Image (cartoon, rainbow, N blue to C red):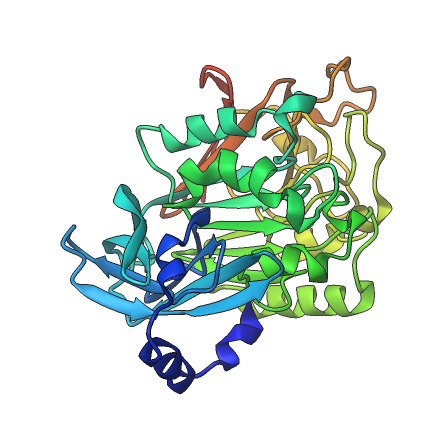
Length: 403
């Protein structure tokens, strides 16, 4: 999507000035709008149609939608990708929006809104985290069940992060709508979402699939962003090894160094686990990052890959349990020179025929084996972590950290 911004306003003036062929009035929406890059003063709204038309976004702080902005369109096979970027928005403000093509309203209403990041660094906020999402319903997947729980929470989250394996069985764009965007559209139309790549997303070239579906920072394989008093870093663990490892690790450490002392919370997320008591192996490439997590005060490390839930006791730089925190499974202070690693990998797919047992290495604090997502709420220097069951919404695990 980035390349389409080489198009100019003059181009659109010529297109719109030539008149609209009658058949374009029958344009159909192929993908509901979804939100990216939603920060203090900006946001990107993306959607897809079945034919080439103009892109118009009407938006405002009231349902009157007093503002208009034209976007750009890119043809991709039998579909057309639309994107409108808004700049100069007010921080901490709720905006309603609707999308139009050739004057025809394609989507809008009470559920179509977004909220910009608050200007106050200590304003409370929350986000969801889940991995292994887009499993086909025919194969036992339940992404629409998880989406329903997220969308109908009494306290709405501000955004979400994806922990890899966003689309099954392979991360091809042709599967994206049926297996991800349709079941999650009730969330994505008003909740920005920032996914990381997983091994199934890597079964095909992500630069020709994953990258064109999303509008993410940096090179989209690994990136970071800030929100209020927190810093988020997404990494690409590919097939259990790091993509472009030397460059990615150098970038990762430089990014961590740059934010030291500037934020109260640092979250790192990706797909593969390090040490684990689940059915997955321990991935050395992730464990090799443990010294950086500990050195640079990373608070939570979130991953998917294992289709289950697991929270480990706080680790040190060598991946050994910090014994002084072992008994504090519900409350933690700031963890000096350590971090908590959490697998939350059953957003739409559950490992059948397996359930967590006792871990011989005694590193596991809590575990649950059911479809779920995690919600992290930040209030200044207090963090509350909850794991919510996709079916029924029960709280499966909870802990608090206060600094």
